[in-house]
Amino acid sequence: MKQHAAFSPSASDRWLNCPASHLRSAALPPAPSSTYADRGTLLHEYAAIAVLGTMREMDKKARDNGVTFETDEREAILVYVNFYDTFRHHLWAQYLRDVCIWATVVITLSSGFLYIQRAVSLYRENRVT
Image (cartoon, rainbow, N blue to C red; front, side, top):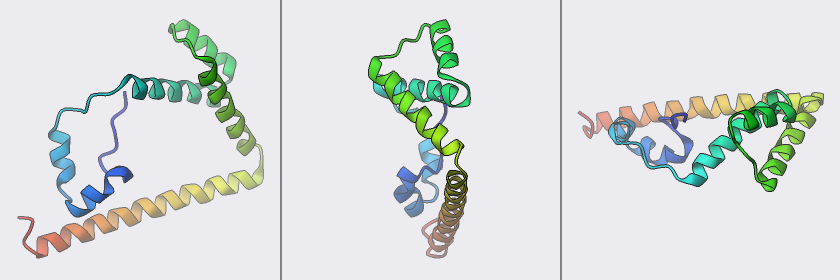
């Protein structure tokens, strides 16, 4: 499985208030996963196969790996693939995608600057040695 981001948005309250907290949490053993999280990760991986290729390719790879999908799981992947295909073929959707990418870049950079600003502030307050 892939590692979780060191500076994940869901943990920003922690790492913005304690810049070194990511070092401490990296030293901890990984949190136990659940069967639901594992299944969700697996479904995302197969959805990526379907988006980048075809549903048929996804089904073949799943069959080769002994993976079976529940009806609702396969339908959810199909909805995702169709949604992606709709966006892929429309010019306005490509512009929207680009705007979202740039917004993500701006938010990431802003978060980084806030992180540095908070670290400097804590250092100046002598809270970090």
